[in-house]
Length: 332
Image 1 (cartoon, rainbow, N blue to C red):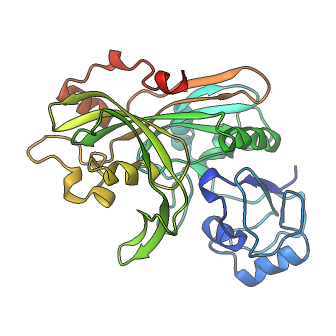
Image 2: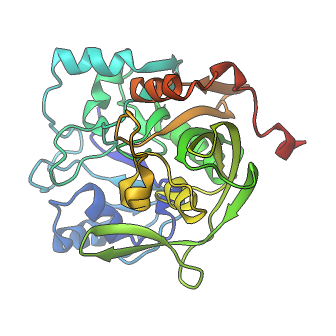
């Protein structure tokens, strides 16, 4: 089995430089060694030789040769990269998250607190558990899109490079629809609306953040619908991101004065309700995903509320039967 991997560029990675993309996923790989891999054609984008400063597009496939844990190239192309063994406990855990599976696609309910990819200080992450989701396939599943570490809910995986490319196209051309549930501190006004606010990444003493930036930011649009509210204290809000920018929903809700409950990063103290006995964690859940199946038909999968959000629903007396399709009027 070849150790060469094709990784699909996610929607929110569009326009990222190739060298910075590698730094995100392979921080141990030196720039000089990456340049060597590019010169010798071992790293390619869509099958073509490129330079380190090439700008990526969502849905493109990046060819990654086998790398060992120190970032050196494994000489033989038929040796798969070695990774840490997955414990039986982790295998049972990640398999329990599967909501849907067929020969092409796996859909999981990602728990809040589990990072999708690793990094400094993140030894346990979904990407490191994907071998446990091979089931009877030779290839490990591929990530097609991502959720924030603290966001729970529906996440789709492709079981081959070809399927990953088709699914990435569905996300890129907007034929995939992602609906989220959130609880906001305060009630958005009006109850139904659209937030159009360009977003840009910035770095300060608190680390990397995303901010509204009409001059330098990339366009970002979110539809929202208040499903239920508890007077003027909080609201159950359905969200439909029309674009896929990093932290888009969190920044947009904070921008209109109703931050997502528990989101201290973007809402500060206003993201918490004084006197309310509620979990002080992010209340954002990828509730439902609707997208064309790579062969035929449609995949339509919903994830149940995580435990901390169930507790908040009970606290405010929100009735889950009010779910329905809050965005039906937008598609009419």
